[in-house]
Amino acid sequence: MKNTTKIGNRAEALAVNFLKALGHTIITQNERTRYYELDIVSQTGDYVVLTEVKYRKNSNYGGGLEAINNEKAGRLKNGFAMWLNQNPQFYSLQPRIDVIAVDSTGDIEHIENAIF
Image (cartoon, rainbow, N blue to C red; front, side):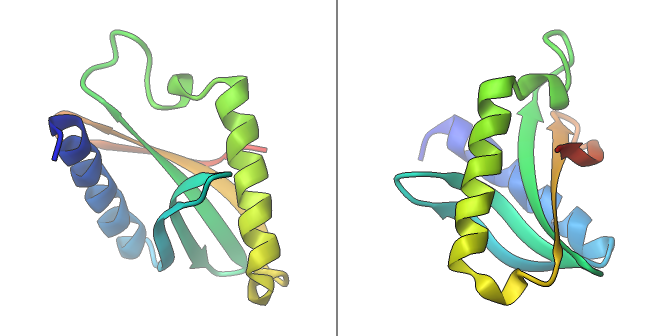
């Protein structure tokens, strides 16, 4: 396994634990098809939440939100829409896209409704 994969897996594990502590129920992780890649999908209250996890060694080149450009945001929205269409049991919930940035010390920055 590549070192970057290990780092990404560690960041996602920290994000999952963080979301669970906030009361989220994890629905799926690392959902990948030829059309999309979703890090974490969870449910909290009346929301079904896609959480994009970004690892940043440091903030020299911006934080987690800055790592998501318009093209990436569009891919996340389209992928989440496809996933929702394949999972109609979540139609009654309000969709939301969050971003979690994890740094090299394990600190977490959570931005709710980061992409709309």
